[in-house]
Image 1 (cartoon, helix red, strand yellow):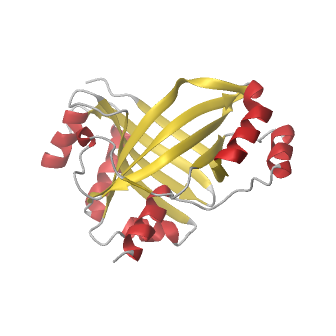
Image 2: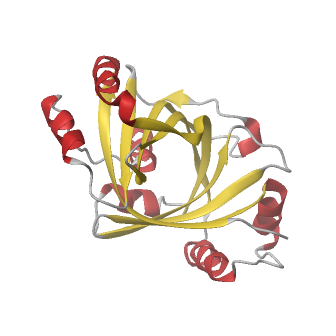
Length: 232
C-alpha cells in the first residue's frame, strides 16, 4: 500500500481576528497572498486522548513540551477517503508534525486490531503507534472548522491560514458523521495562523503592529476542553 507522508517543522503563531479587522488586513495583504493548492476546505479532526484528558490538560498548562494525536480529513470522508493520522509535538515554540496518510477504513482497522501491516513509512508509524499504546488513547472530541489557506508570494515557506466557524462535539466520534458541532465563539472570529520555516517579512510585521494584531496562546483542542469542562 502506498502511504503518503510529510514531516513539518516550523514556528506557528496564532492571532484572533474579528470580521472587521480581517477585512482591513486582507485589503492590505491580499496582493501578496497566493492560494494554496486547496485554498478553501472543511477540516475535521478527531482528537485522541486518555480517559482523563491528560494531553488536553498538558496543552493548556503551556509546558515546554507537549504533544497531540489526531486523525484529520479534508471535507467529510467515506471509508475509502484518504485521512491523515498525525502526531503533533511542540517544544520550546517549535512545532513538529509527523503524519501518515491512509484510507479511513485502514485507520479503522488499526483501531480495531492495534496494528497495521505493509507500512512504508515505518518510523513515523512506530512513533504514532507508540503514542497510542503509551497513553492508551481513545477518541474524545471532534473539532472542525472552515479554512482558507495561502502562502506569501515571496516565500512558500510562510503559510497563512484563516479558520472560522470553530465547532466541536463529544458524541458520534467518527469522521463520516460529518462536521456538525457546537460553535465555540459567540461572535464571528477567525483564527489566523502564520506558519513559518523562515523569518516573517518586515513589511508584514509592520502591518500586524499597525492593526494591533498580536499573537495569542490558543490551542483549539485545549480551549474546547476548557469550555466543556467549565460546564460540568
